[in-house]
Amino acid sequence: MSMVSAKLDLHTHSTASDGLLTPTELVTQAHEAGLSMIALTDHDTTNGLAEAQAAGAAMGVEVVPGIEINTYLPHGQGEAHVLGYYLDTANADLQAFLQFLRDTREKRGERMVALLREQGYDVTWARVRELAHGAVGRPHVARALMEKGYADSIADAFDRYISPGRPAYVPRFKMVPEDAVRMLRSVRGVPVLAHPLRLFGLEDDLLPRLMRAGLLGLECYYGEYDEPTVENLLALAEQHGLIATGGSDYHGPGVHPTPLGGHYVPPEASTLLRAMADRLATEPAPPFTPPSH
Ligand code: AMP
Ligand code: ZN
Ligand code: FE
Ligand code: FE
Image (cartoon, rainbow, N blue to C red; front, side, top):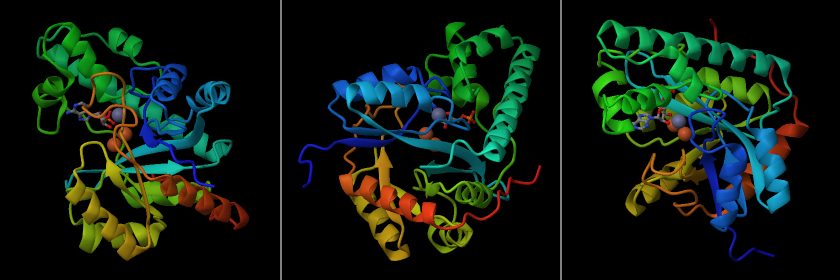
């Protein structure tokens, strides 16, 4: 009963966060690329899902509800991103917390623009807000910098102005990945650690910690990860009993090198995610636990 040509991509972004394509444009591109399934995993919002699912229904592309929560490791050890699949988007506590996260993203975006302006760069918050249709992120600030000729590319803008240690960097709301995992479990989502390569203390410390918090998957097939890297991550997932997932992290044309559907993801990944979500749906969910703030 296997669909021989099933192609899927479980990590994508739309204009609901920092992608360049609207949910409809994204699904259209997935359809044109021959994908049968995508997960929409926008940062801190599920607001693109309804449109994506409507477009998907019309075009025969299954749209898996997803999200990506960017968090920080303690002690300045960098970022860890947590994906969540099949989460209950109707949960009011969840939506209130996501709104809080997006509100803090606005204040942070304004602060980054203020820092740039103090240093003589003529970018405006109004323009950044115009470029962002939903959750504001550094990529929107980067685009505003590029438009004014202060950077040659998004990556260049990050490197020069808005990466940690650079003059206009402001962190997001501080949340540890355990909190994102617990929050996702409380809304019956399947939490997956995103692009885990080079995460500080991954094998010996981070993964065990996240598993105690309720982690269920590891993103093994990702963007430009080469075959040996994927094999190593698959072994790690297997060893911990985690579902191996994957995707391109597509943000629109020209943002990252990997095109939509550009990294092979076995259909089994979606089957296992779905089965896990179905199982979680039959169990009582732990109470909603928003990160302390
Ligand atoms: P934020 O969540 O606002 O801090 O923005 C982080 C997001 O910006 C990541 O999730 C990526 O989508 C994107 N990003 C981070 N670094 C780069 C980079 N060097 N070039 C392009 N996009 C980047
Ligand atoms: Zn992004
Ligand atoms: Fe990410
Ligand atoms: Fe992403």
